Length: 175
Image (cartoon, rainbow, N blue to C red):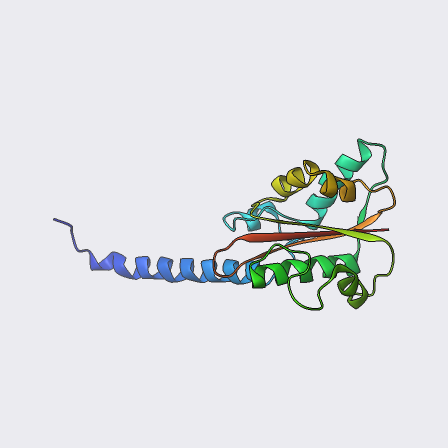
């Protein structure tokens, strides 16, 4: 028969409430496509995410430099375009370049003020940036965008579907 110790009840309630608040804040940050680039690995622990703009840049630059290509740097307009696309896909629960009327890539690039050559990779279901980039490298059309010689800038984002938590990734690279 279980022992009913009322002294521990407040502690359990506190931890349940705190745990619920943490889960809610993680869920909300994911579905809103919050940029996690400023968070340390410790801050990301338990959120189901492994992502930072600097980490993505290091991975992409390693792939590019090993092939004799120039490295890339983060671009605020491309970051905005990637964030908007990731959020749109998560909201519509669709991994598509055009998920709603008026969301063609060229239209989205104009909206963020980017007029140079650019390309976009999208993905869904991968929990880490490493797995996402690995999948793109195994796909010839996606690899072509990652390794395009003209590209010197990028933006990358992940957003989670607020119902299932499924991650939607968008990478935009430009000249």
